[in-house]
Image (cartoon, rainbow, N blue to C red; front, top):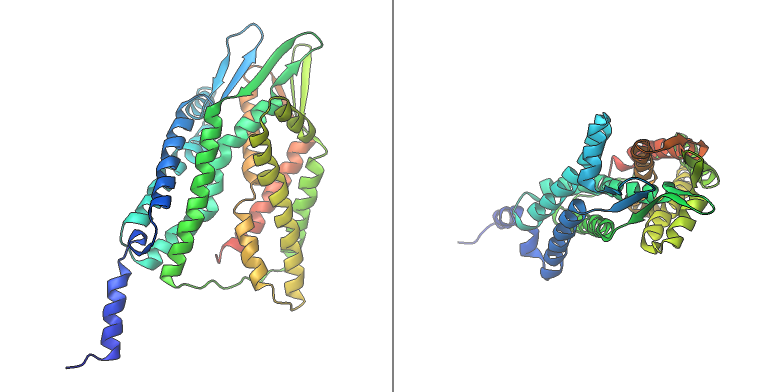
Length: 339
């Protein structure tokens, strides 16, 4: 007795619906090793001190992920404490669990692909604590001609945390791609209206202008320091924190500017009838790594942190970054909804 094509195909579909990604992968150990390294670096980076703030006449102040959350909570900034705890502790842990779940557990391919789509856009917010560290180091530099009143130094744990977050982002994109291939779902390209041209190019202008303006002024007694893009670069180079400088320039300046300018151009080209489908698929990928909105929230957290031991004042650059971040979120919501 011969089987009908429909029956055979139905049996084939039912046998592949519940397969795990691990069972279909030819090489498994790189992903599993990377996931293990991510978990170890994440736990270590969260637990140990990431920044040491040295102030004249008082004991050193140590900043860590858990310590930063506790300080914000004790100071009454409970909403910011919850935000930092959620993005820097809860979400990275849940993301690692989700990556392991998607890799090892058999599940419906469409469900797995849907979970991967949630991980990709939210993953960058786990970098919040790293941008808090960067802004702390740049803003807390109170010096005079003959004396140093306050300075902040990066500790190795900060780089462990950053490495864990960046590696988890790469794993998220990779496993989401595998899940998409297994599910067979196709994305349709969004229609971009003229409001995206205004929002994207407006965000680029605001971000570009913010690079030329002071962001924060920190003062204590007769000492004062203005935190800006120039001073941030100079401070990181002076302390030999080149890896952190690369992170800032890449994820807060270069990729966001490319994304904003490219998105505005694609919206105009699409309205003239040109096919921009492939370009938009690359653009969505770049958006996942553009983090001006995350950096803006990090600067806000630093403002409240510094207010504990010095006077902090938000300047023009911060408000320009905030405007760019708001426009960035608007652009992402318009484009990301179909990916």
